[in-house]
Length: 468
Image (tube, rainbow, N blue to C red; front, side, top):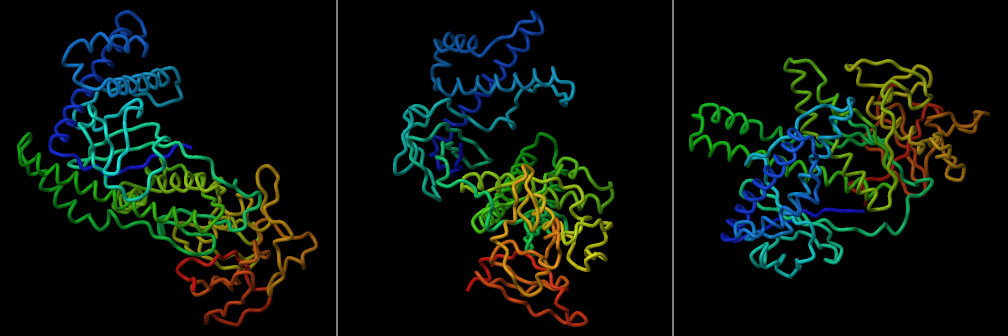
């Protein structure tokens, strides 16, 4: 498993000027190498390979202008040209893939320099050392312990406005334990608009707010940028301030998503999510204010990045991860499997067949868990049972034994594991779990007192906030 650590770099004034010169040199080299490939194919139908351009680079390095820069940095630039050109050829050959012409890189779109191998670099106490490429020791502000330097496979430097970041890619060892065949603490996640994430135990996680808090400042800077004269110094300054604000929003969003994903992977040994068409959801809604607000909230949430973080963290920690078909998760009843049609305005799930009442996002999260094969009565796609009998215990309200056919598919009458909790007719809130035991929660004042068969058994694991 390859894992990249992003570390803030603190270059000196001389190092900052040197890195800026390296950016300009590698950008010119990238554009020249790409022009050579495109021109050879356009004029003579000839494809220039990476090896041929590497030999040409050896000849160019006889010039003092090219010899002043590290060879490994130049070879990394040629590697990027080769990858971009190969993808361009694949797009032209496959009619199903979206077409698009390969682009030359302007100054605002070239912000990274890299090296094809870290063999000449050395990690010291103060930072990263290389005499020619870095001009000495590049100080790093490390917020965590890094893996052994022998496992480092790649180094890149990225500039974000006035800041520099070092991306160190390490080859991580395989986890000490593999995912369990039958997880003990699985959780299903439903990604929505009203609430960012709803877990299968009913807990809600809000990941929106980074963009919403900065919208007034974004509007003010946007109007200021529109008033500026083109190619003026003031426009350049306002544009830089706007870029810094967007970078700040992105850092806050990333920190929040890392916090959510780390907590989920730490407290659950299996995570199931919906395999959503995120590109289609970004285009969903009408062009009126309501549709624009929905798309803005969805982009602020960044569900694709959250799912990606959860996936690789599960891989790193040896947790199970599953993507399920999202069709019908809100319409299907998690208690009996019957179809309960709803519109977007209907926020509660009320099943006339089994009588349970849940929030529609909570019901969808339970369906996600069932479809992954980790819910009550669910089965994995390969046929492995996800709810063994030794993990089912008798508790008040468990009606699984009353059915001769056993637990129903997706039925909530069977508990997932010893850590469970009873809920009645969607009486969420102060329900908490008792480890290795059962507890009947006291329903709130919502009508008549419940009967024995009206309890809904859901798998609940005590969250860190309710531990005591």
